[in-house]
Amino acid sequence: MSKLTLRLTPDVMAIHSLPANSAIPEQVFSAPLYFLAKTHQEVSIVLPSNIEIDSDDVEDDWRMFEVIGPLAFSLTGILSNISTVLANEKISIFAISTFDTDHILVKSNKIAQAKTALLANGYDII
Image (cartoon, rainbow, N blue to C red; front, side, top):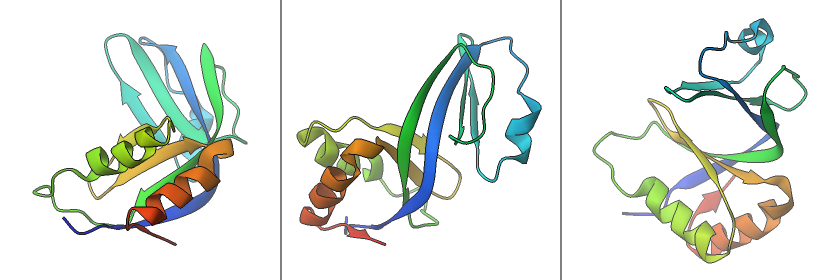
C-alpha cells in the first residue's frame, strides 16, 4: 500500500468517559467537531477541549491527524501501519474511524515526535 497523506488539524481535543446510561450533554451537539461511542460499559465523547461537559473522567490535550480520504472499505492496514510507526516511537494513540476516513489522536507533547516519525516512514503531512 502506498503511504497516505495526513492532515494535522488545529483542534485540541478532550476524550470524556461517562456511565453507559448517560444522556449526551446538549453542548456536544453544537460543537464544531465531535465523536460519540456507546458500549454496554460506557459512553465516550471526543470534542474540542474548550467545550466543557460533566464527565466521570477526561483525558485532555490531544491533537488529531486525519487521514485524507475518502478511504475505500477495501483498503487494509491503514490504522495498523500508522499505529506501528507511532508505537515504535513509544507514542500512544487514540484512534477513531468514520465512514470516510480515520483519525489518529496523539497527545500534544508528542506531536513533533509523531510528525518526524510519520514523515520518516513516507507519510505526507499537511
